[in-house]
Image (tube, rainbow, N blue to C red; front, side):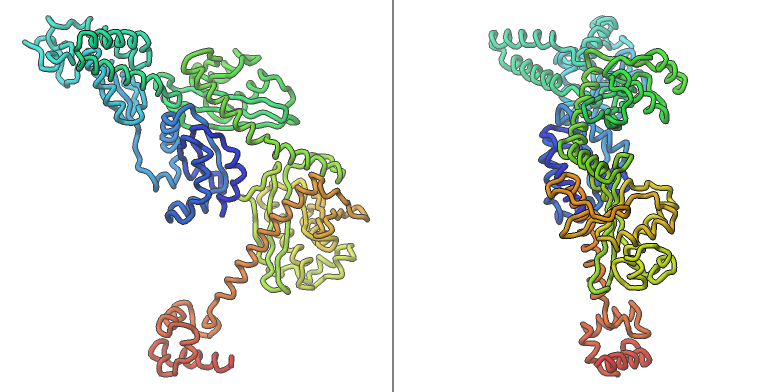
Length: 622
């Protein structure tokens, strides 16, 4: 099952809250979920098969996994909601209802503003705060603004000409701006400003005042009022702890660049915030040997230039460090976006918090990409490059294997290892068609090993066929071509592979054979095989790739053989197609039942001509 291939990656996930994203083989996001503990939540999918048809379909489609770490579960919920709206993963559409989390809207576009619950942030001149998670917290906060600051809750048009205030004023939940003699517009505007400060989280002074009022009410034995102040303090503290870096309408449109630079390379994660919501996270990476300059200022500048080469920049871009040509880059971005773009390095506040969160995720991405296992893969590829005397570094290795039983149901498989990671989405399987068996093109090979197997339905011709078909397709698609081809076999299989490559004009590609049991490398230009120590990192890497190709080929062979064996004997009878086969099996229960049926019984089901064909077939088979 594909999800099982992610087991090693899942075991290294952090035990922190955040969001996880599943991708299919095409790189599309198919599911977005949130977790209070990422490792535990994602690990639960390893044993989730059979829970429901939808979960099974998701697990079968998963090819890769990414995570985004947040500071709290509330932030994870907000980010999950934003990513689902932006990416529309198909399994989220099936598995959850489509809703927004609530915001509080302070209608500052009115003369006498109110506080309302809103499901959408709009550019209407009002002030928005949130989202509030859980939803009940939004309504509690709205009621608190009525009780603390006297903000009105009615829909009445305020003119100040009303004779007397309503009941809300009598129970101290409204300042009554509807009566000019009771509350002037200036006084109400002051209450609105206090409400805005409260919703923005500037509530340290407010907590001191409320604590004093609660203490005094308790001393005066006004316990109900003291309980009200206590509940208000709890709500304010809850709001203070639930400040959202993932969704802050006051931040508008901006991007934040987080970076982690280490000895193995650099990982940059860009958090894209639109209309106050983080809607996407994009990762940029580069290995150390790809960096011309290791200075942070240079790397950040190059990242900004390359990132916005194909996309418009928002009005503000948050950077982890000041870049070299700051003004020139700002002018370039402004000209491309046709609006002023400002680059800044925030030192405090919500912008700094967003930047730090992007940097934390970049650090996690760096550890995942350049872990000890990945670094050892790079070392193994470098050892292999030296042993094979290659001029360029190895990044992509493709390995081929054949599976057959006495020439029956012969199949082939190819697996891909890129930068030490097996790329399941790039795997290919082949049913051997015998297209190259006995062709003259094989006779043109100068290899005596290959000449000796011309025209035989064996591993050599099968290997020739799958290598030919694979790289003929790559020529049509324009790549990517591998840095090294590994053939499971010895000189015969290797010669067959080179013959296929030469027919396609790809003799410049490098191929080696890995011989089973002996575990030696066969190279075309060397008379003797290369023997590596059993504990050598390069040999271990090649063995792992070869074993994966063998597993893939054997699994495909078993599936092909089983499918052939499951074909009904009725399929070989002239005149019996899929519809008549189902009809016969339904009427007589099995092939044995059809064999025992009389001509009259068969005629009632399929007619006289087909009944005679069925009887003739089984009579000849005796």
